Length: 118
Image 1 (cartoon, rainbow, N blue to C red):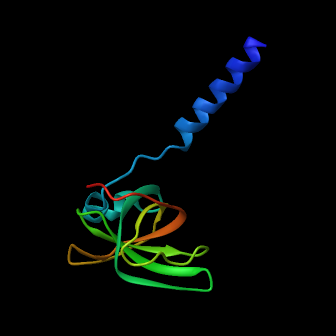
Image 2 (cartoon, rainbow, N blue to C red):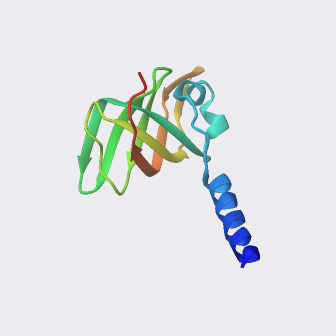
């Protein structure tokens, strides 16, 4: 019985460790988007500026104070402007010209509402 319980606890801890994704600063992603391209990242911030959604798809912009990032949602629409969200997804190829990054886009795979940190 103890062996079974310890096996379950070990599997749960491993699942949490493997499933956890450290939250990155948007400024770090915008500084070198190629480094994160096609990799899963996790960010959090306030929905600002653009927030358009229809038919369970959406495009919105989040800002964490270090930078802004566009998020493309293909299954949950867009949250309302002013909402604080945590988003996990994959960084898509971006548009860079003469060393300046113009649009970094994250393809959303998961989203959670988060509280604003004061």
